[in-house]
Image (spheres, rainbow, N blue to C red):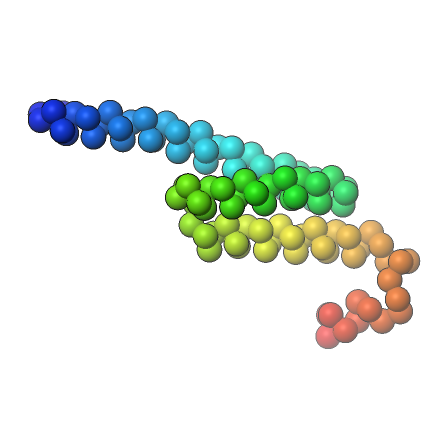
Length: 105
């Protein structure tokens, strides 16, 4: 246990920050799960909407120091790739001929 008044105060501050940070981490994970669930269900529009809602939350967590910027970028990149793949698989008729062949080659 902290013995000096300064150490007691720092312990109180650390506890407040820990609770706040845990809440913030839970929130951004929930947003990521919403995007993942929409991708799993195969609903491109819902996945895009969830992704659009999740990006500012991830950026806010980076600014607050909850999440490293590279980890946020990695999440955004992978989720966006999943959503793009979902859109390509659902819109085969709307693409010009050979549009998907160049990307896969």
